Image (cartoon, rainbow, N blue to C red; front, side, top):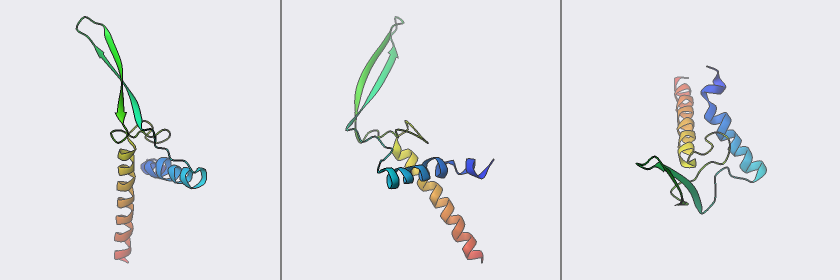
Length: 98
């Protein structure tokens, strides 16, 4: 596996989001106050029922594009923070060996 694939969270999310914020002044997270959610279920008689529910802004914050598109941004941010923690721990361990 290539280093770029192993570190996809950095290349496809951290760097891209940094560039969006610093250069484009845009965040990749939906800032809508309500997010529509389509819910579909089958009834006992074989019909399909559909309905749209509005989710409050703090219940679900989807990423709009790129790595993790459609996922809750907080989950992807956690993945990015975990990646940084592993990288910094590795660097500290290498420094302590020198």
